[in-house]
Length: 110
Length: 135
Image (cartoon, rainbow over all chains, first blue to last red):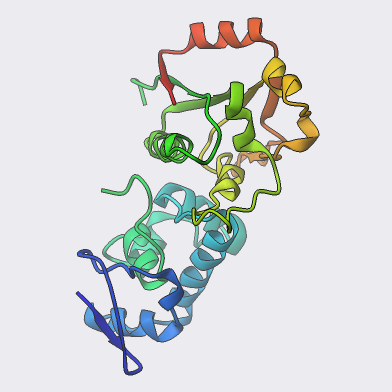
């Protein structure tokens, strides 16, 4: 199901993840969030940007357990827990935040 | 987890040319995400999977070698490399990636979980594993 972002049509897979990682721009996250009736705050962007940096470095989307720990380490313990991350991304921080960040679905996520 | 098992992933093939190395890495990530005790061993041409400075731009395949560096974050504690396989290819540990591990709660750290071992030790490790996946 393709999505419309800034006048461009971007291809996504059956679960809504971008097919081409290079298509990503911040507006992609905005469009996806709007479809989920979610307003993106600085706190959301902190996680989205973190995921993009993680992907850049390791070439994979992290499993949610790894994401949680890494967030705790880099952004502070009060953010490195499921409660905080699910509060931001109710469909699951691994799946939903990775989708907004233009990454593939995390390996091992079902 | 009470049913935690010792998983050993034995990698024998070069990183590219076949899909084995990448498939193995994906299964490693899945097993580790499900909190199993995961170790990896690299033998024969498998040792090339850990060699630094890979560039896949000429073969149209994703360069997944940076992914090994995050295995410590997935709580993988041991990566073994067969000494003879390394030496017979003119390689040393200096040619291989460094994979750090850190316990984020206790801040206990291991600078590099990659360990070169001889074949006797490797045989022992395989024997001690509950499950061996061979790729």
